[in-house]
Every structure is written in structure tokens, then in C-alpha cells.
Image (cartoon, rainbow, N blue to C red; front, top):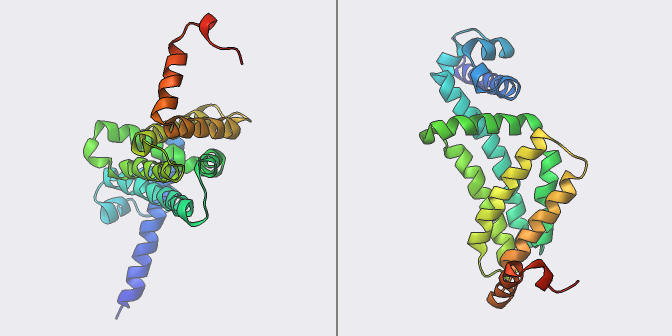
Length: 217
């Protein structure tokens, strides 16, 4: 009589193999290349495996990006916990996000953006992607609060958008100074939202002034 535990373990391994194969296909060929044949051939599995384990190729794609989201969220959540634990403030968080540009696997980022575009056309399938944005915002808000920012939620949303932009630009055109440029930009954004009302009003007035009327540095 077959051992149920062994059958379950074998099924779990096969499912994982299909997910990893789908991740590779997504990163290399995009959503259009994610087909039953491409995935099963990459995984070395029978042609019917995707339908058996996932029901549809679309569901497989959704679960792949959930894997990416879970991995990135765990990394970012660890950073958020350190904000209060070891005194890491905006400068440390800015440096960590900048470091992610070059340390997070490119294949995972490519797969995530492929599914992101697909999810924009299918909003009901975007939960995993939304969770990444929410995690980035949570980490940024924690850092802003640690710095005594007056508008931490507002700043966190802007920080998340800036982080996504840097990640995408780094994928398209990586430069040797990307990490330092990103760190400087993230820190500048933290500073802007950490200003009190008087400081903010002063800067707004300064930016409105004509170049000739601005004070010399």
C-alpha cells in the first residue's frame, strides 16, 4: 500500500519545481511566454502537471508572484523591526533600500514587474503586489516616526513610489552609482517629511522665489 506521506512529499516537490520553473520563464520571456509547455519542459514534468497542481497557467503566475512578494516582504519586515530594536533611523533605512537595488535577485524583480503589468489589467489578481507596496510603506513610516516626522504616512507613500522607480530604472539601465544615488534620494525624502510647519513653509517660499532673489550659499 502506498505511503500517503511519501505521496504528499513527492507532490509538494513537484509543485515547487513548477513554481521555480515558472519564475525562470517569467523573468526570461515575460507573461506571454508563461505557457503550459514552457513551464513543464523547464521543470522536466509531464505536460498535464500545471493543470493538475494549479488549475490554470494564470493561477500559476499569481502564485509565482506571491512567492516573490513573500520573500521581499520578509526581508523588509526584518528591517522594520530593527527601526525600534537597534535605533536604526531614516539614514539606515535609506541605505538598506538602496542596497536592495543590487542585492535582490534580478530574476525575482523581473518576474514581479511582468506580473505587475498583467495585474494592472486584472485588478482582482494584484493582492500579492499590493502587499509589497504596503510593506515598503510600513518600513518607511516606521523610520519617519523614529525621526519625529510630522507627516509619516504621507511620506511613506512617496517613499514607496520612489523605491519602485529606482528598482525599475536599475533593471533597465544599471549604473555604478545607483546605490549611492538612491540612498541620497531616500534620505532627502525623509528630511522633507521630517520638517516642521515653519521649515516647510520657508522652503516652499524659497522654491517659489526667482533665481536672482534666492540667497547665495
